[in-house]
Length: 213
Figure 1 (cartoon, rainbow, N blue to C red):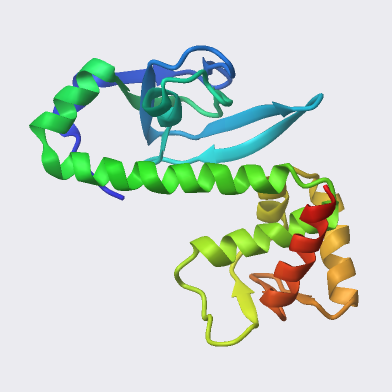
Figure 2 (cartoon, helix red, strand yellow; figure 1 turned 180 degrees about the horizontal axis):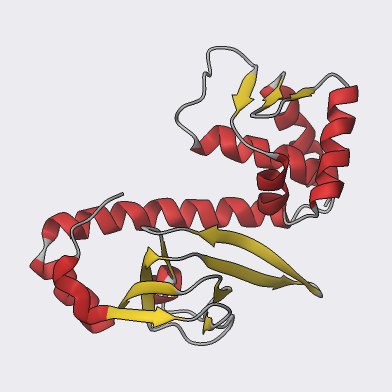
């Protein structure tokens, strides 16, 4: 979602690859809009560090702590040299009052980010690994707008690596689960896409596993 933020260069900050931008549980007093580079969001669940997301330029992060006046819910780490615009409460108010068009765009982005964060956390809290993988496809079905939904069949332009990332699992483990679904004739795996033959079947499957966790 493009925005003209050239006038806000004074809010720019740069982080080096591997540098921690903020840590889980610390107070949150700013949010960030990525100008270049990638940012990894990680969270400790039990004794395991899980990757929640890898953010790209034009995406924002850290807004939940600012909006909810709560501690950080994840750790943010620069994967590359990352350039961001940093907004704290004071300069965010200046931005909102000075440019209503940008303010509206940011509010829409906030709403989407809140949904995406909560939805991905639902996947990570599932104990059943097959249900985690299936729930990734339910999430994609809910959030992607370029999917043909006229039938129960769904074609997802995604990869095994992407699914592993969203499920917080290893690629080889996810590949085994997808191959199992293929054997059951519930999925088809292609080089450039993954096909779920009946999305409602996956929905029932995940619901049954979620009730048991």
